[in-house]
Image (cartoon, rainbow, N blue to C red; front, side, top):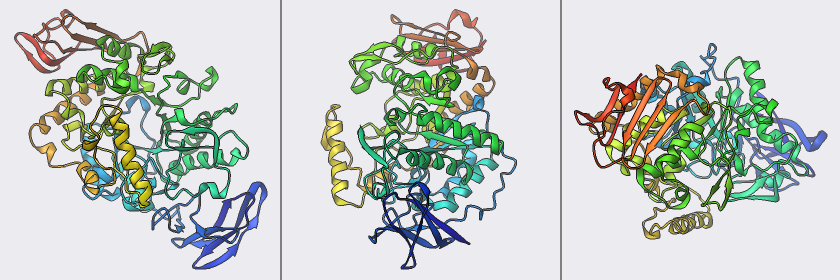
Length: 568
């Protein structure tokens, strides 16, 4: 089947290059140009003003990497088997974040299919794929993608992703695509040659900001909105996770985030299935998830770093960097009760007042987690909680996440206390860029007190190899026991779905600083964690009934670093 070639390139004369032949495109309104294109599977590129061939800004596939030609894809060719799929109600969401390249030894979409039954047995209801849009090289986290419509060639390209999503739906698993709309990666980024995709009016820590509100921005916004629709419609994804929306700058009357939520709702109505939009943000701004009618953006949910930071700082004692704002048991209790720790409160780390109250928004509109790719990978060695915490505290963290009023998010391998680290890794082919990333990583961690000599080189293939999960671990001690704990907690949560409807003020949480005891009560559950040095008796409210689940509970009560849970 011959596809039409169409590209937005205002002010340029464009040729479509197929098989070495150059075909001039005809001008259309608004800076678009179009004409006959390639056959399905055929390589093609666009040449601007007689110059070198460049990949299609909306390339559906990059079989030869970011610098190669694009390949035409027939999105009607795959034989889907999920016609009856209607998605997962968000109230039942338990999200599992995974990196395709490190999830299995093979590191492909196809190989991931063989591990989906593990997720179903665990009780997961949604899989969140770290970004798969084409990025430089064969290995990387994916947050430096440059071809935002193209599934990465090393993972299996379009065919592999179709098969993975179809297999997920066949097992009752929703699929979220992690997308990056705040910047593009440095290698293979040709968008600026085509039009005003970027602006110097704003800046991000990772590269030029995309142009969402300056001159020529209408088509840039359309580029992003169509990309969201592309993943939902062409790959049957059940929604998107938006990376670092605090670095998406838009002063338009209708913010890009609101426009994305509007597009998602329109797709949900048309397709008859759930479509979620989840944002990562460090703003502590409830407008992300508040309805548009109340001045919000209407997103499904948002990540909540405050809960993570409060939990991590309390359990590990770490205070470097952004953990300087946390560490008290009262902080963790505030997060459990109110969602945000900083909600119009002075932050010493930021040296300013930060956040605003969640108000009457359900706490489940925030994601809760003890680990994710950032919080593990932003450590110098990429060490997981299992390497930092005692067995009891590891179990306490799991209990507080999985029985929290938040929507739980797990990071791959967390459920068995994986021994593999998850450091930052890249495969930049430009030597200058690769060196800059390696040196920059060492400088960054030196500022946090780590010895630069111990920081792994992201460009070293061995760093990526070490991040791959070891699938023999779940079958042996102590990983087998950790996995059993996670399964039991998830099963318990399924019997207390009222957790997903709780709002600020409907959760009880208290901290005894003297004995270092945390108690948390919600939706018929009581959780008690002993972080002190001596055993503590079970809370009187438990009535002395046997614990539904416990670690370190004996005749003397709850042992130090122990956790016990009661169904009331």
